Length: 332
Ligand code: P6P
Image (tube, rainbow, N blue to C red; front, side, top):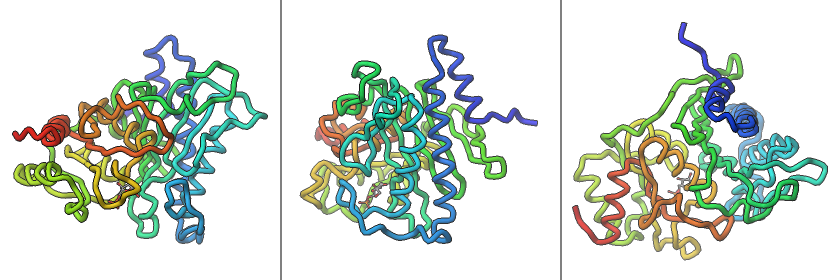
């Protein structure tokens, strides 16, 4: 029988490679895996639990908050705030940083997350996902965490990943030593290792962009898209970042959400740096790929605001670099 490796065992084995590791990071990844199981249970029965639909509230992004968004956010906060492992959290759903309540001790790590990305797809049973990023605090141990603890460039990421709620529930993570995928076995309630050491295939299959906005793109992006088509890439775009990223991670391809002139409120594109682009960029680089805002690696960007947005080109390195070339007006 194949060795059955749970996510707990895998993280512990990874941790053994680092004598200095205290096991706290391992425990944080356990906590996130548990939150994923709790959220997965709700996403699979959303319609039945009458949890479907919207709350009538709007989040800091001005987007209507679906009940499942709220549920996922609360699950992650509640399962992490009391452990003494975190100094502070930040969520796509919450305007300001999420301090650790005074009755709980603070720890040395920071958790930044999008509790349920792609949530507009909830009602149509399209795959959605949780995206997370773990950093070390910069502020003094024993004090309440700060905004600056959250505003760190992606190069400072210690671990990152996502949970994909689709036909199967998967957790993909990296702690800086490769990208590893686990599939939730509902019968035992465990994430089991199914995709060790994921590498982006050298030959890309897909390009993923919302071509409905083409008329709002800069001419260089339109030309870049023509070049991708000339290379016989198929278009696959689900409109759910985690699902689009996951497919390209396993099949090879490029996802891009460029700056466009469509919405004056988002001149830099729709996606957020801290808890969407940066964690996925960390994974992409760990899997042999790349991620850029069109001019620089995503992981090099120093955030200045919690919810700042960025253009994103992510996937096969050669296609990311090709995009950067088109943006510099260099043609292949
Ligand atoms: P558009 C979902 O709302 C999301 O933030 C990402 O998951 C997804 O990639 C993107 O927006 C889709 O945006 O403008 O193409 O519908």
